[in-house]
Amino acid sequence: MNSPLFGPSMSRIVLEALILCFLSAAVGLSLNFKLVFNAFSGKAVSTPVIARTVIDSTVTNNSETLETFPIPVEMDEMDELLAAGAILIDSRNSLDFQESHLAGAISLPFATQGEHLEDFKSQVSVAQTLVIYCSGYGCTDSFDLGLVLIREGYTDVLVYEGGFPEWRDAGRPLEGGTE
Image (cartoon, rainbow, N blue to C red; front, side, top):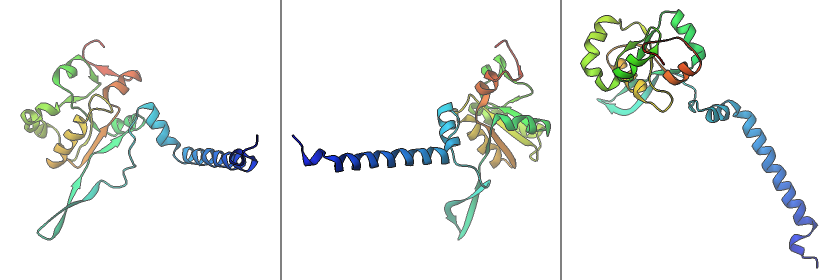
């Protein structure tokens, strides 16, 4: 029993459709390999930062206001930044900092930054490069603290998105209690 619906021409159409789907998936993956690899390895899946400032959508007194955001950095950039004199800022809570932190880091917990901000500003120049970290990719405290520090006048604010877990898991230097 030959049905015209499932004849040789329909089989060919289905085969061609499958080939097109496979080819388009292969091209898409090859063009977005780094994005797909980062997504499956748990890294940030964000678009590259082209500029530090973006035009805010609010217009005040017929003039556009500019807002600056912290720039994300990866672990492979950290050695160069630290060698150039960047200061590490731990935005996790004080107990986590005391237990263990990146070697040389300064504690400025985001949750209590209001209490410690004036002391921090008196010790750290606004021209200094700051690298802020917290508890990894799901933690926003480092980014939020970066926004606060930018509003306070700091001009070179970076966020290490992998944070403490990525650093520890890579066997990089830590200080504090036993881990």
